[in-house]
Length: 270
Image (cartoon, rainbow, N blue to C red; front, side, top):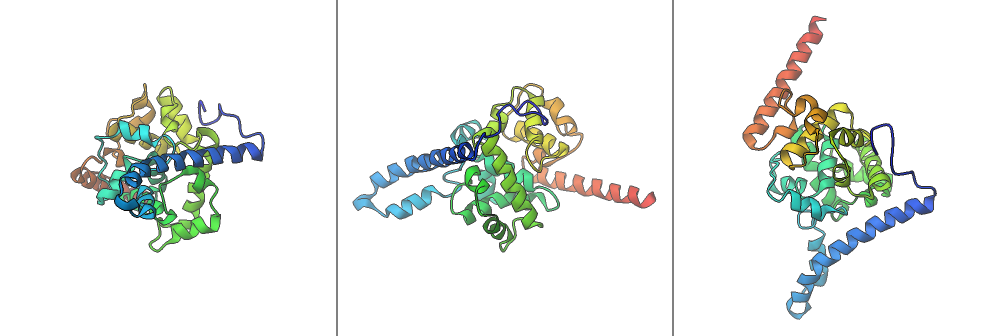
């Protein structure tokens, strides 16, 4: 996918091809989880509680989901993104690329800490690591119920459940169900911007902020990322990408409130 208007991967030629892609993604995720659980099962005295061992392997922070998550974990082992106020939720964001994408998708019309905490709750409610194929093919009413909670994962649970499902379907169709492939497969910042703009729910600013987030928090810096991120690259406009500590979180929050107040004041004068 070279830009927002063109797609390299052809759309599935049949429902069989789509089902095959979905099944392949699920099998790969299941195999990764089984391999993580195997050493603990083999080492348990007297066989141990095998069911509990497998359940633990499905814990989102112990086993970030999505095919290709292992490579992502290797890149971001020392990354920090203290945005939610919850260590487990923050850790998931830097160990699971799909969690990071979903958090960015949800970051609108609600506090940023809630948006980026919701992927952890989503994983827990779905009963395992986040998986694009599973979300893409989930029953829409069930996914809405998951988003509705309580507590709700977003101010608009139905709309954001639909948008999350649409984004995951795009990942399955064009990125083999791998969230990290969106940036791993981009040759430069312009291509990355186009790939992000092609995801449902990612407008121009959201895509640019996410490029800045990848560069500043995850150390993913394709050539030309600064130009693609625009004013979010150099801090001209602050965003969630600039949160590297709780103090920075407070600065970003204060800046956002200041900008909102300015906008309201200008609107009142017109």
